[in-house]
Image 1 (tube, rainbow over the protein chains, first blue to last red):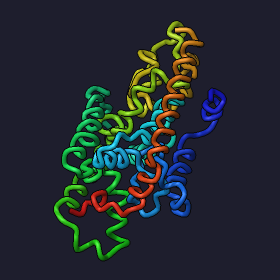
Image 2: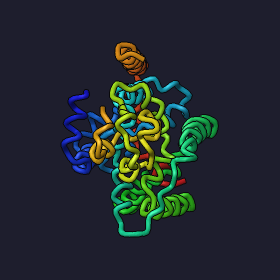
Image 3: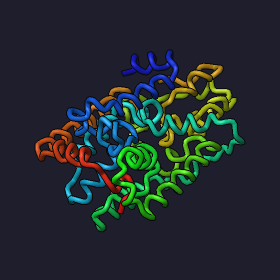
Length: 260
Length: 48
């Protein structure tokens, strides 16, 4: 595993993210792979989606009132192997947010405070509300669902257009708000909303692959924070639950004090 | 915490997660996930 991450250090991240996006939406493997939750935030209502969205699947199990051993087991397996690295390397929505942040607009560097909101979204919108209302309310509001599934399906299937109502308008407003936020702040969805990130966050301190910082060598130049997509100081806590294991900090460290 | 104990903890978690996957497969949850993901999810699209 360490060898894999050392290899990842030698390559650029965006091609891996682009390939991951294509694999997760490879269409032709749908009949075989759609029963497998993908290691990323990718709507299974997308016409090309090849895997199941883990958050959509969790809501479905809450609705049928069954403990989702299979989905949680897959997510725990991925989290135990490499913590939140899937957020940094594989998640299509994370990739999309990073692309949006490249737009030449003024930027706000917000601190990771209120990151605990992710756990609230997970508990309330993914488990509690679907359990009691029998409706997948996170899916109903999800901006990734609107982007990948809502808009393409409406365009592809004219029959659906007459069914569109206030909920679709609300979804569009949420998507537009996030698009604007993504353009000025790094990965806002990952940092304050994503329930999948909330599931993987506690695995960062216990995963097989972890970062370590040589505190004696660190000069606290903050270059790691400047390139960090979630704006954290990795030298303060190498096991931070916000860290998406993108490894950008290792690449830029002038004294080479961050290790896998 | 020593390296061996860290590996032991990660190994135990991996085994637990694999056990959960096997338990889920025995309860046909792979098929439930497949059917759910294959149906056109109108709520994802935002149609009431």
